[in-house]
Length: 342
Image 1 (cartoon, rainbow, N blue to C red):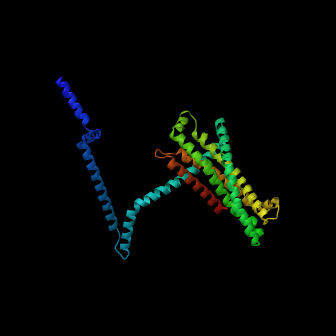
Image 2 (tube, rainbow, N blue to C red):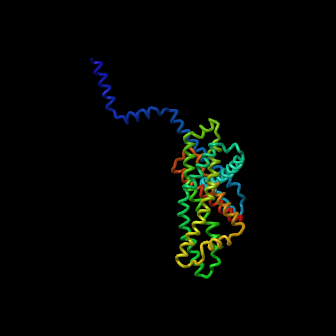
Image 3 (tube, helix red, strand yellow):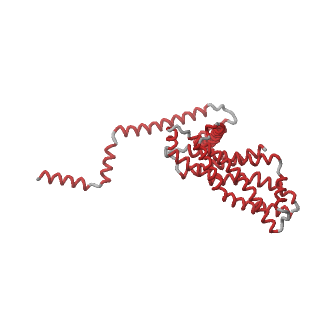
């Protein structure tokens, strides 16, 4: 009976100690001499590395030949030495963007090569292609319609109004072709396609990558590149061309409609469109559709690459801005290259 009472008293004393104190005692007891020695060794390695870096800087300063500009050279060496961490961060970010552009070019070539083979277009690939074409065109049609209407009200009507007031009515066609058809329409359509469908593709591909479905496809003998990337790239291409044509027709029509009711435009709608077409050169009939086609193709490829190359540390808060930024980069690159080249 006494033994039982003593055991109960000891148990009550142990339970009277707070749980946090027990955890602290456990943590402190787990710190042995080996762990303390490891921490000391780590701090000693940091001090040795700093001393070696200081010795390296001193050796570089000694190599400077004496002369009138030697002090400026030494100051430059010291500044560059302490600016290296910042330059490393800037360089890594720059390399990542160039790596992405090179990846887009490589994957684009792979899509072109694989698309030639009849074996690529199996039933599942055709189904995915048709589904993505419907989503891209159907999902972006109303956004393109409203954006084109606003562009027609803001750009076309104002251009017709002020050129007519200045007596430069004959310049209406060339200016609208240069500003709206060549430059503004591809950029706006590319941004609509990116925001409406590109970001969804990034999210879809990232979920497949993080969920392990891509590895599951590989284990079953299904090529994820052919099944996912190829149909999306060509679906974005067709959608970009279609939405681009819709944008051009709607924007010009809305601009004409406003100026006609304002009394500024007196020609018929057919004469207005005929003047616009007459202002286009032979290169415009090749340049403008090619810009839409290339831009849509690269947006589709870039969205798939961003989603499928997801990292463990990525989440929607970092992945979606990355996909949008890369898409804007591709749009600007395509627009600048076509503008400079032609």
